[in-house]
Amino acid sequence: MNFDTGHPIEVQNLTKTYRLYRKPADRLKEILLSRPCHVEFQAIRNISFSVRQGETFGLIGENGAGKSTLLKILAGTLRPTSGRCRLKGRVSALLELGSSFHPELSGRENVYLQAAILGLTKRQVDEIFPEIVAFSELDPLFLERPVKTYSSGMFVRLAFAVATCTDPNVLLVDEFLSVGDIHFQKKSLDRIMAFRQSGKTILFCSHNMYQIRNLCQRAMWLKDGVVQASGETENVVAAYEQYQRRKNGAGDSDIPINVPVEQDRPEGGSQESMVRLGEIRLLDDKGRERVKFPSHSRILLEVTALADRQDAPFHTALVLERDDGLKIFFTSTAADDLPPMKGRRRWTITLEIPESPLLSGTYKWYVYLLDEHAIQVFDMAEGILTFTVRADPKEMCLISIAHRWHVNGE
Image 1 (spheres, one colour):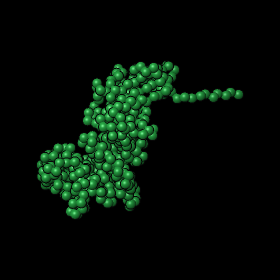
Image 2 (cartoon, one colour):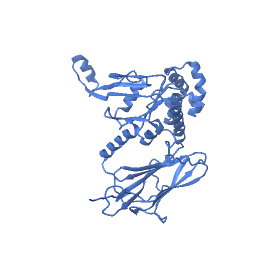
Image 3 (cartoon, helix red, strand yellow):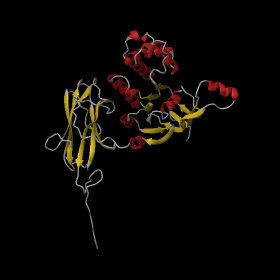
Image 4 (cartoon, one colour):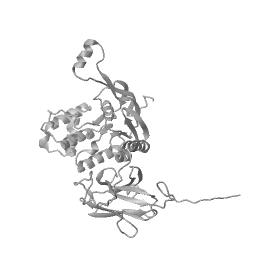
């Protein structure tokens, strides 16, 4: 890899090795005896990549894969053991919650401290301070109090406001879209979308594959500190999900149950959302609710959405999954170029599959209500409807594809 490409983020053969001691006294013993009393652990190993100007680059992997170590090195809070990295321009990092704040200093003092670290003068901070306070929505009273008295939500608001209001060239984000309340998550996402549109460079780390797919042009998958895949987002995410399926094995095979969301809301759904799910029903061609379908039949998935705020535009996304975790089908109103829904209290959204190509098996629907960018999740119902399909024994495999035979003999 050419290290002098001119890209905003360039990383070459980056390695971070930690020395692990069984007990603190082993450190002194190692010095006195001049022999190793530790074992080495490589958090990341020989990582090389670059991020282009204006690109949003995704970083994925399991906990302990080395993602946070890599981000800390890029942010300058951790030194690598070997290799090198270079970031051009002003860099803001949203890493561990409040990690860059001094707990004894007030919110106001931390704002000036963090801005100074980013290279801003006091006059520049004076000019943007009202914007930072307005974006964070913190009570002015708390700005004068030590940040150790802040709740986690207050930490998030102030940290995000400082990092994004200082107009960075490069933004490093580690799972920050998954914390805070729905209102602030939406506000933060809008700010990141504005950054993308203005040509900023973003390195985005997340366990949310939907956000990675929709935000990032390229991605990299880390496993045990080593790059497993890097390139176009869809290819990298598909490889990661395939690995997860192999690791987790087949999914459950419970008896199909049709559960209205209002009666039994799944984990992950928000009770304080701008738009929330109502009833979800699976219907046949006569409008009857069913959980068993013959192959090639007409299937209707009916979703009710309840808008707590009529001025909040939203999209609907659907995922169909086989019981072993294999994602078969995805669609959304945004992907099919439908305008976002807005201006009504209650919506009924129906997906019609005129002739289902599914063959024998057990399947689940995942339903999502998303913002106008089709990224931020307002509400979700994952695996809420499980149903089975029965096909002719002569029809095998997963789906039926319309086809013709042409046979000629001479």
